[in-house]
Amino acid sequence: MFNRMNIKKFYLLIVIVLVGHNAMTMQPSDTLVNDSVKAWKFTSLNMLTINQIAFVNWSTGGESSLSAKVSTEYDLEYKKDNFIFDHKGKLAFGLVGYISTRIEKTDDIIDLMWAVSHKTSEKWNLSALLTFKSQFANGYKYPNDTSLISAFMAPGYFNISSGFNYKPNNRFQIYLSPVAGKLTLVQNQDLANKGAYGVKKATIDSVGNVIVKGENLLSEMGIKLLTSYKHKIMKNIDLRTTLNLYNNYTDPIKSNRWNIDIDWDTRIVFTINKVFSSVFYLHLKYDHNTNIPTYKIIEGENIMVSDSPKLQLKESFGLSFSYKI
Image (cartoon, rainbow, N blue to C red; front, side):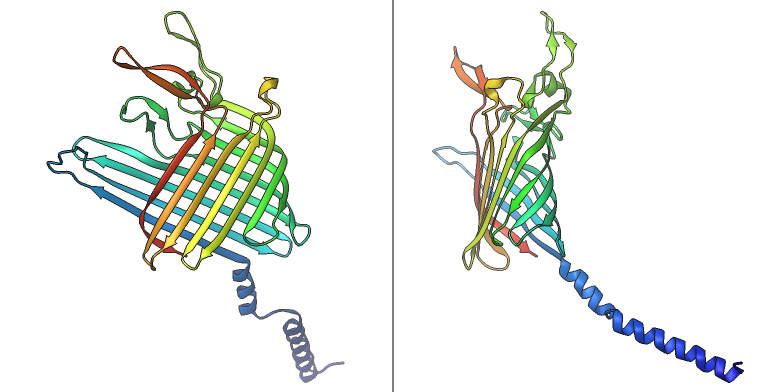
């Protein structure tokens, strides 16, 4: 039988063995923290752009204005073994004020993406994507600030898809989903009643009264192709471009099933120093569910004569205060 001294030695031996085993099989705590930190990667570009122009007794005319735009683009990525989580965001809001007359919105973007991927080979991933696009504030048909054409969640776009992602390098990738669901929400009832952004418009009687309200949701199923490319053209010039194509092959009108919606944006940043950058931005869109009105001057009045899908273009170029992470 063990006496007290032998029992103490036995317990001490067990403690030594357990501690030694843990030391051999477990990594130090600081190593674990470092591995966790390395798995996460975050980058962002934050900009403030200001533009001012003034006219005083200018013989050829002009209107004094002050404009400002705040924007951020960020990318949060987590990689662990064959699992990849990626969250990208693009947010922007800009205003221009014409001195003592009116204020107009110049830019308004909410563009978010979440992706979960499983790495199947060096260049191929199985991926599932969720994207959301909308705007922060009401938009009007300027200079008429009473004619509402958009609002928060009017439209709001959700796209849910799964497919294959090919990424041969860190600059280029292409994602293809044969099963991509697209939801278009128009939460403003006045716009929904007009059938804006493709939703079913309201039923109206002969005197203009709404009999059946317009629908607030349009659901589609189709194929999605998303490509992105980024490249440092020169030491101080960065290019990033993204092309998004969508085809609704379940459109109830068969002749529309070959239609392809296009969303293509390109950004080039010319870095001057750590504080200042010059940024060129170009955005092209073509959406078969978005009708753009055509106006003509008839007897001195600007009258809408038709509306149909058209190529939409937005371009900007300016000097910005920038901060990179």
